[in-house]
Length: 147
Figure (tube, one colour):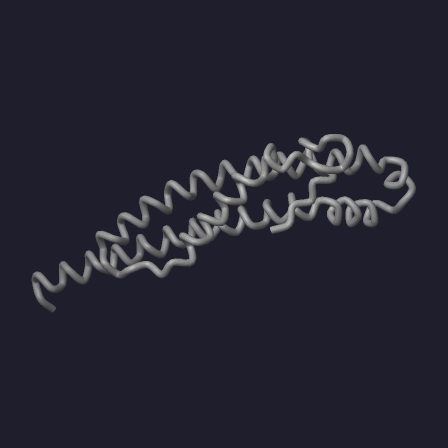
């Protein structure tokens, strides 16, 4: 993922960030870890499903926090774009201004969308696993007492 530092709140004033101090790198690394976790096909073993559900709940809580942080970052970037281009933005129609700001905030927007999708996927994955666990419990009960 390419990071546009021009409007970053940590910008050095010359249009670039100090990459070692970039607030996005640890967030992106954590998001990539969540993405990798979600791309793993779950086992149908009930014990493993319970363990995965526990991990999903942790990731769900963390993705919610990261989403809030990403939205705060997005708001800061948007404010920086507006402040640096106020004269231009005040002369163009609102729709053009909105598109311009969005085009300057690609990294922040991508993080917000990515985290939102991860968060929603975690919710659905948790629901799916609960269904699989219920099915396994019902199947076990039927096996014990027969059909």
